[in-house]
Image (cartoon, rainbow, N blue to C red):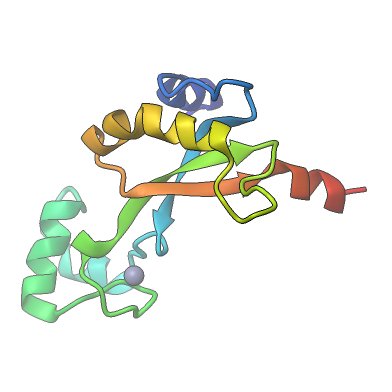
Length: 131
Ligand SMILES: [Zn+2]
């Protein structure tokens, strides 16, 4: 996917009230499902390798994620990555109210699109480290 269509894909989630938080990408949780040589070997008769083919294989061969996590395909979820340029938590450990409001406002949309939840990318931390 090109950079521009990526941007368009996540634009519908908008930004938080003070623009400190916005969805920028997606990430596999707890990790992305890993396809291995075994998948290709078992899939030789098929044109496509996707949900349907992998679930068929798992019925026959057991769970096959390359990370050997023991989880079936269906337990590998996708979360939305939220870029943060302000603190995620307040000093008392509560979630930043701006972030909380933002997540609440897009929750229905993200659930409808099949996302399991949110991951957070602390942009402030990265800036500090690169100095
Ligand atoms: Zn896995």
